[in-house]
Image (tube, rainbow, N blue to C red; front, side):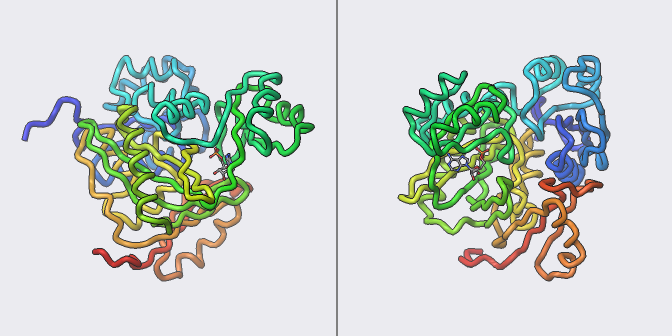
Length: 364
Ligand code: AMP
């Protein structure tokens, strides 16, 4: 069969922007398929540098970006908060997948929530907040409790403040650095879900099973696969993720996070156009994992089967949790993944463990 010119066949080099554990695990999956990876990251000691070629440079360094683009066959991201100008420079030289429009939509909560709502995808009630007066007006309209979230650069609960009383508005506005934000009505949710979808160059898309996520100190703690929810709710979450990926004309991965309200309604919270922490369980419990799916998508290969052969519970090893590594290695059914980070700071994701169980529904 002739190979499409847009396909990067095995042997090619994938450029990855961002050098964290997501880049590291992508590079490992790529290596298994015969690819090389080249990581571009401004931080020294990045976990992905240990397993791939690397460029240590800032996202504003035009010469470094140009040299990086010349050294690779395709570029993707393990981190979506990359400046528009950097992506423009890269796109001049080499295919960038997913494209800028996808990153732009996921970078800014105002754009992201607007994207969901324009597609008639329900979210928590929200308002954009551009200044202190806007915050007061938004709080009056939505009511309290609500959560103030910076529009950009928020993750793991950073850049977020819960507001329970109007007297807290000044403090909340100061706490997020008086930056553009959204105010979102607090959702007393029953549980949190997420789903990862992969979409290829040809528009074919596949979804992993929907999972439940539990957080500790605003950081993902545990993912339960599959989520213990009604099949229609799982299907609805998958349909939303597939529709969002198609609308974005995504080439790559998209993770969509949801709240399930106490009356069983699904509300989209946010999305990430890259591998996602809540998809790590797929490495041990699916025929094709999220990282391989990501590599296949950005290289223009056919996507693999996302079939789940086992049930799984993934637990993040955060900070000192990593000291459990020896016990985990001796536990039957546990699969240990460590990210090669030297220092176990509090709140830092050091690795994860996936505990496998036979599928409860025995469909295989
Ligand atoms: P986010 O950065 O938007 O994913 O928020 C991080 C976490 O904060 C979520 O996974 C929820 O656990 C919690 N959270 C965020 N927004 C809300 C909300 N509107 N209502 C209740 N909890 C929320």
